[in-house]
Image 1 (cartoon, rainbow, N blue to C red):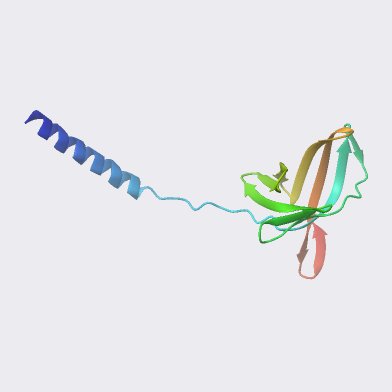
Image 2: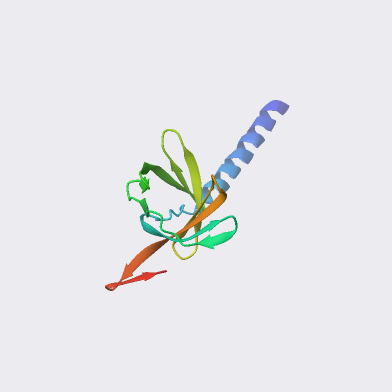
Length: 128
């Protein structure tokens, strides 16, 4: 008899918890749209800012990207854009002002490339 009473109380408790969890409002996950053409605005090598003449970073709506002949897929994961192909995977940080910062180790050490997306508004093109 004790076990039956215990099982009933446990079932009531679990049902109450389930109802409470069902009543908690869920927030929709926000996806950041980073697709577009990004021009290299600045490069840092060995701690020094240098002029940037790199090819643009193109993030397509379908989840593919292009960068200096490198093509693959990208995925937005929080504040990062993860770029990958069948062999290489790297990530770039999303920063305010439509910027993406890609850091990597090259033959001269740590390199930091800052790409900015040009946003067209009402017939004007501006960096923002």
